[in-house]
Each structure stands twice: as structure tokens, then as C-alpha cells.
Image (cartoon, rainbow, N blue to C red; front, side, top):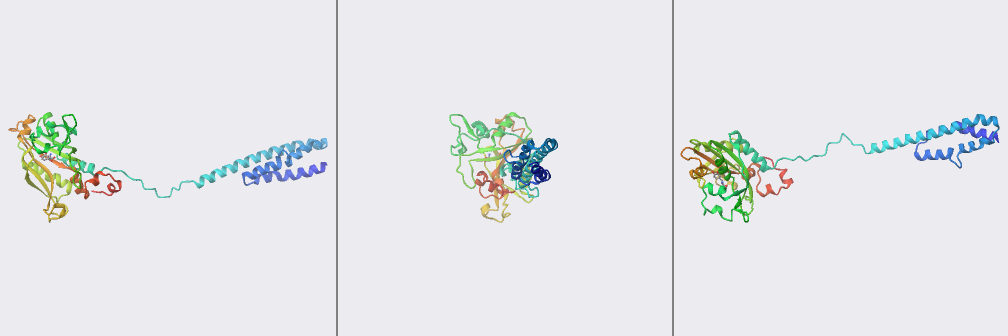
Length: 347
Ligand code: DAH
């Protein structure tokens, strides 16, 4: 009996720790625990149970050794288990690891809208020419939008078809940036040199070249002895700043109630360089802006003596310029804000 026990003990004490230290999976750790320490049939458990049948001398020798082996196996199983768990975690991480050598995915970059871009360009050129920024509200009075600008009460520009009037209020959406002239001249003494960029509104059917909401930049210069030559010089520099050094302008007599003389300014066609093409209706010139010398009635309305002071004014549509600079054929492309279209537009 005690010989069987000794044989069993010898076998276990030589092999158990070795086996446990070599298990390769978490399932094998559990299987080894059952094999050696299982409560029912564990091999070491059986030996420990058999200790009580050994002679006293042997009990004294083997008792502590068998218990020490039990502790050692428990510790070994535990450390194996931890090592295998750590390995599994690392393998999981490895399979989900970020590959830093991959090229970065494209990151869409935002930028200013072509209309803002164009407006900024226009005000930056005028800024360098000495014009300072002035602003007015988009909701205006009839007085500033029409009356002060020498637009008589029966002038067709006031027609309901052109102007958005506010319901039940004596107000309207400004049809041009020119009312900023009135606001500024009433609040400031000459000399004056301002630019007024902003949004304007017209009750118009929308088509390829018309929008009910669009933008203008107004210019106003009041000083002593201001002439058409000053106006022409300033506008030449302005237009060349926008379209390059070869851009040429011409003045054509025209009528606006708030200037005298008044002119429409054309730019030599940017597409055919004056040869004549569909874009310029075969004329070689493109209509670009309205301008003139400020009418004495307008100066007087604002409390400025037209015998002492004179000045010029001009108003430019921003969208027209943007369409030409970006080569866009239809104003609606600027307002639908389809990113696939806007992304392709470059000045
Ligand atoms: N306000 C005019 C318009 O909207 C444009 C214009 C013409 C402005 C002549 C001016 C000017 O300052 O002198 O059509």
C-alpha cells in the first residue's frame, strides 16, 4: 500500500510541475487543474487523501512535501493562466492595430464661396486705393433707397415689379447699395472716400444671368474738383486689378438719376479680346458697371454744398464679375451651392 503511494508520489513530483508549465491554452490549464487538483479524481488530491494511511514516519516526511507540491501546482497554474491571457489580449490588439504607413484618407478642405472671394478681392483693391469700408442695412427706407438719390416718385425703378416692399411697413429691401451713399454723406463731412459692399434685392424672374438676391460694391468719392478723369483712372486700376493688366475699359454715356453725367462702363470682352463673340453679343465689349459724377441734388439732399464739393460714384455687380473670373456660365450655379460644382471653381 505505502509502496503504491510512494510510486504515485514519485511520478507526480517529477512530472506535474513540468506538465503544468507547458500547457498552451486556457482550456489546457483548466484540464491540468482538474487532472491534479480536481476534488473528485485529482491525482494529487488522491495522494493527499492517502497520506493518512501511511506509517507515521512517512507521513511526517511526505505530508509537508505533498502540500508544498500542491501550492506549487496552484501557483504555476495561475501564472500560466495569466501569461496565456496576456498573450491572447496582445494578439487581439495586433490584429486591430493601425497601420501608420498607410496614406492618409483625403480630408475635404473648405474654402470661401466664389462670391465672397470676388467681393473680398474687389474691396481689397479699393482698400489699396484709399477707400474705407462703409455699411448700411438691407432693409431700407424709400427715402434712402430712392428719394435722396434723386429718383422721382414716378420713376419706374420704384415699380412694384422691381422692388420688394415690406408688408404694412414703410420699408423695402434695398435695390442697390447706393443708399449707403446717402447714409454716409449725411453722417460725415467731406472729403469722403468709401466703398460699400453688400446684398441687394430685386423682384425679378431668375434666369442664367439674373437672381432676385445678389451683391454690389458701391464706391463714393467726394472732394474738391473731382472729375470724370479721376473716376476713369480709379476704375481702370480697379478693373485691371480684377482682370489683369491687359483689361481695357470704355465709358458710354448713360442715365442714372443720382449722377450727372452718368456712364456705363464696359470692359473689353475677356473671352474674345474685342473680336466679337456670343459672350459679348458680337460687340467686343461687356457691360460692367454704372458710374458718374454725383448729382448736385444728391449732395444738397445730404447737406453738402455742390458749389464747393463734387464727387463721383460707381456701383458694380459682384456676381457678374464672379461669373467672368470663374468662367461660370450660369448665375444659378453660384447659388445652388452644389459642392461638386463649387469645388471645381477656381479663379
Ligand atoms: N445703383 C445702380 C444700380 O443698382 C448702379 C450705379 C450706377 C451706382 C451709377 C452708382 C452710379 O453709384 O453712379 O443699377
